[in-house]
Length: 200
Image 1 (tube, rainbow, N blue to C red):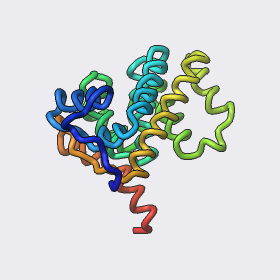
Image 2 (spheres, rainbow, N blue to C red):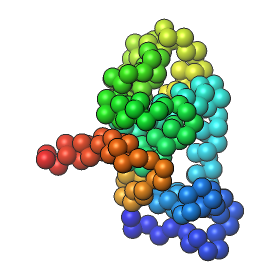
Image 3 (cartoon, helix red, strand yellow):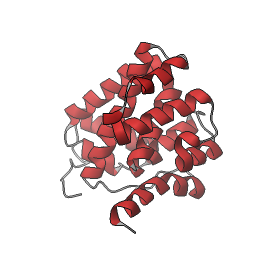
């Protein structure tokens, strides 16, 4: 990453809050936090959007939409970070997370979970061809109009954040608290995407 990020020493305002959150949780500042700290106002707006999305769909659906989108994009940063969040929140266990990383919407979860993941994957790879049939699937499973919109926003906002990190070539840091097997599974989608691009 060639972008110069704010120094840790002397950070103030929202930048200091961003850095302190990483330091208190993991003892260091992640590369993606430093990159987003270049425009702290945009990061605040991103956080406000997340806070507006989660209440209607709940943390479980938000994290599943996030993981589905991140997997489809091939975002190491977001798969590792939200994989850990899902484990810590009890949303998924390690076996479920590994299967989701490897199989996406084919993972052995319940029908609503798989529909959320599939919707997020489709939005992240082929949004231009989506039709009412895609959202009708969510409605048939009991999601309300507000929830359908917020699931869409959850996947879309992950595209915004993940693709920004990828475009800036932000280094991927080790995320403490994940087993080697989980890390390998979470990193596999991005590695496969890179092989497809290179033709290897």
